[in-house]
Length: 440
Image (cartoon, rainbow, N blue to C red; front, side):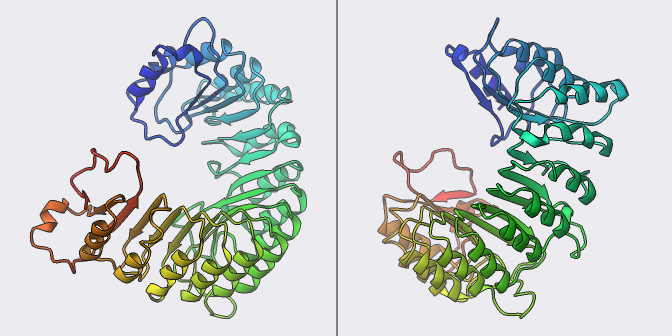
């Protein structure tokens, strides 16, 4: 991927490159000199994001690139860019979006570099979005206080040093915030301060800080209820939590009917209502009934076929649905496919849905962009039947334990399929599938 990026930069039209974003790319690091390949003497670059890149970059080339990019507004650095370089970059740009890179104090940085960053941030009156903070010591936190009042986007999902007290000190100053990404170790206490300070909040993402942490850590339904009470403009949530209740979901749906995206992950699969022990069907039913504009939904916890009946009946604008460890019978998947007329992507994992449900949806698959099923009850025979009846749809069977050719030799149609990927494309089946993927 690094070579591909380099080739893009030296191609015929490189002088018109305005944006290079590697965030969603799988990048193989092959040296630090790719950043020297941007055009000279000046560029039209407006946005550069290499935060996901592992490896050292050519620091001097980066500084020269920033200096000759007068239109640069968005810059997200990786953790290899040291604090002293960040100070230089901030002094010669008017960034709107900054990903800080590493805030670690190296041997050559010391207090002088920290002071320079602090002073540079004092002058950043155009900054609206802030992320990064890898390896940051807690003493760096006061340095960002000066930019908080103008921030509309704050991403602390890579900043484990922001414990509850530090987080509260920052979030109290972020009264114009629209988008917030945090780790769950801020707790319900931290979310309560968000609810009282960030009244304009539209998107909240709470990620798991430590998968090995005790179950008693993290956030619960109480934090999200508080957010729904204080942040009435909220329209998107991605929330990892220890527990959830139907009454909380009903309250959240009532307070925030503007939801377009609601993604909930209860950490323990098939967790029931933490108060009553009942399935969470009624809570998610309230979400799809109240939020008429819902486009994306991820359900979690103990769920029966009833929740899919509610989704099929009420989620009229739903475009993407993710399901895991849910449902009782094939009827659950059938309810969704017979409803949800605008559905484009359906992702199903570890559910009891089988061939009956898969084949019952053939009238819908032409309209879907993709269907993904893993660890369900579908068989090779069911997938073959689907492929035979729908030749215009690509039906891929995936067996990562070995090649499909090996499995086909002695496998009957009753053999369960590990993973199924169904998708439409104008060019037909892909020609680069590895050996463990077979297009039927």
